[in-house]
Image (cartoon, rainbow, N blue to C red; front, side):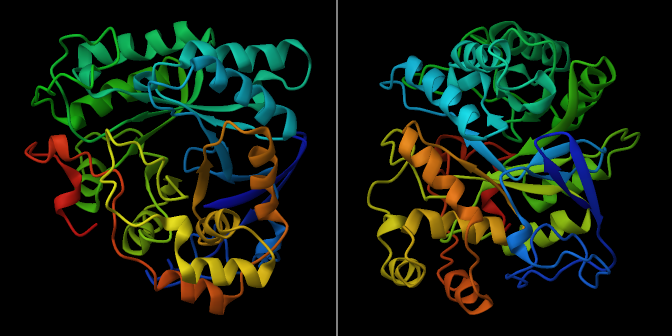
Length: 369
């Protein structure tokens, strides 16, 4: 794995890692190193900036901070469109969305508007889309991708990932699933889905392909698939102070797979997905104490913790002030002692357990990691 520092998307300095993967308990001060004993001249995590990109195993580069665009159904889609424009204006270049969010039309409008007004070029933007589980049949994979491309009005996606490791029946696949209706299991092998994703990459419709919410066992099965052409470049998972994902991160690093974190601030507390009796991460007293020491908000420290572990951070906000504030995570560095203190808050707590699918054979969270 390499760390690339980009200057306004033009000049790239590649910082090449060295040997031997980190252990699961390595926590502080060495961001985005897939190797431990390093000749890399940059070992200070303050080298990270909003323009830093991590080089993926296929050679493409992903910005280390991205905008998450999920919003509950009661939030007007136009807010996501405006927030995406603001995010691009203040320096975000990584936009994370998904077909099932139901807002790719609006997010695409925002990206194309910022291209049209000269703020960015298409190649400056790293867009992640997700294949919803009703499109897992190999004959439907490209159809699902082309639906996203059509909604976005883009020629290609930078990254396309399987949203979950399980499949659902394709009935109603033309529209995002209705949360009031039960999910209907399907038995499509995700290895067959992966082969169709590889074909989409070969066709130039996507630059990189990856997975989301896979556990170690599922990653091993995919990586050992006969005839595997492309490894997943990333595994996007829930990750935060209460779910630090140390073991999964160590495994992914050993396979040159980047871990990408969603719900880094705990959760949006959407009652449709989250048990509201769970503790509110940003109200944790230990987190608050650490934040006070840096004169930072708990949210900034929670984000910096994940980023400093060497994990790509997706931060969701539709507030202009918070979008700017979130970029402040590059202005300070947590000490190894504070990283250890925050690591000890780990409760292995999934705010989004997707409990509706617990009976599916490929439900990922029965395993330890």
